[in-house]
Image (cartoon, rainbow, N blue to C red; front, side, top):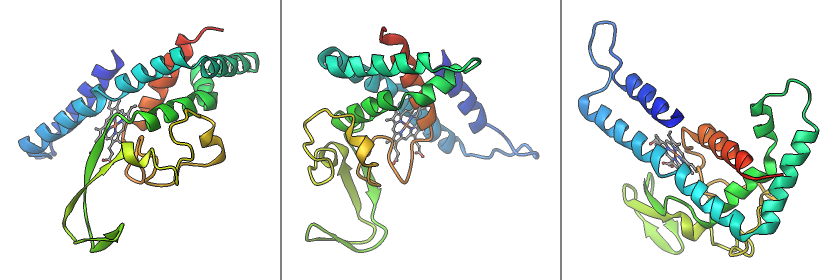
Length: 195
Ligand code: HEM
């Protein structure tokens, strides 16, 4: 229910007019933005949650650690604390989600325009070329993520993801709905696991 509401309010923003009643965006721009919101919001959180549930079924120790975190948060909950306070404390659970996105990134690849002449891996790449990068390869690069095939949510405790290397929500250009996806994922996982 929340997702359709977000989409409706986003679509309302797209059709906003200036005071003189002229449109802010052309029909083509509205169409492009509407499509990207549909794609961005539809197959992203649902894929992450699907792989997370599979991971919890296959990895009892990770499931147990999430339950333990939930118990500790519940025990230490001060009077009047909100559901949001609890979600913000679910650090381990979020690392499990990040590790799931590392191993099974929902976007296999994307494109970037080269802004200046560069060299990569010995190959010259001229300015204005379009390059494709693949998250699934970067995420399995052992120079960035040691022992990459191992499911290890604690890897994000020691080392913050290097910019442009963990491509989950991407940095420096970020998913505009990162916070929404985080809250949605943690709220569902918190309800799903049982103490
Ligand atoms: C697990 C959940 C999600 C992940 C991992 C994710 C990840 C991403 C990534 C990697 C990008 C591309 C950034 C780039 O171009 O470099 C992106 C873009 C985008 N995402 Fe998300 N996303 C998620 C959920 C959502 C949700 C729930 C919505 C909307 C309700 C959403 C809306 C968008 C939109 C509109 C863009 C395009 C932004 C632009 O072109 O400037 N995403 N997302």
